[in-house]
Image (cartoon, rainbow, N blue to C red):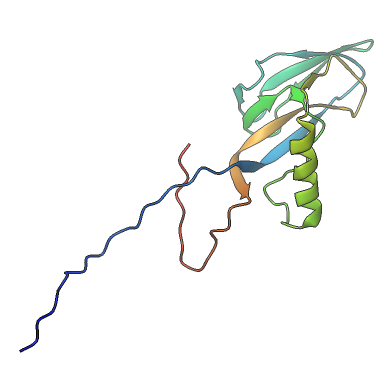
Length: 150
């Protein structure tokens, strides 16, 4: 006669958690000044805007020029000097890692534009779609899923 301990197996999820620092790669659309003059925001920094909405005005010698939203998203009138460096279509390569490292080491300040020249960067719109999280945590494997809670 044989005796054995028997346990009934059930299909379940193994849940564990760990705090991680993530860096968000997002779709930023750069806004350039249509002319020379004083940059006057018409909507609050961080406000949600729709396509074609008037978001700022350039008060210049040739009159007022409107800046309109080319895409829907969140408007940022405050610049950190890294605009366009961290797009969600960025390839994960050494250049991107070095750029993120410089950003984190610098802790960039925020600068608001008050005077603008034609073609100069005056703000960005963070698009409503598409982002990636960059983290040093190594959890990527075939069929493995992660849930991120904020």
